[in-house]
Length: 139
Image (cartoon, helix red, strand yellow):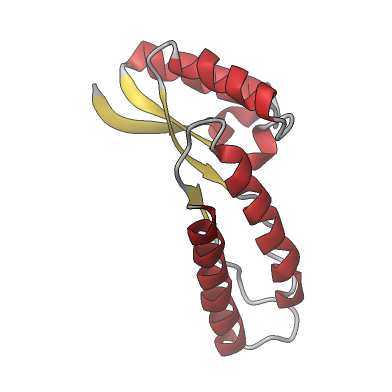
């Protein structure tokens, strides 16, 4: 098996931003005999444990593994939105245990509004540290 993961969101033009992308990516991964799929939080219908367990069983029973789950962020949001984003990440981290996913992708942000590059870079570093601390607290 090839250590390649297909990004499920890349199929959204055909399947929309829904779990249909997850199933389609899993089918493609199985056909191509690759390791698995990466997903994004926006593709999940719910964080409800039974839904996530059923989804995980459906995907992994066909021999396809999950890689990471990406957290969707609006790259144009101001630095002040980071606290909300971090709270969403904490909720996502708690939910992913039901999918058997052990990692999330945390994006940075670009420079927005009147913030300087230095301000934004420092805020993104602090945000990344907050994600790491949130993940560690779940262990």
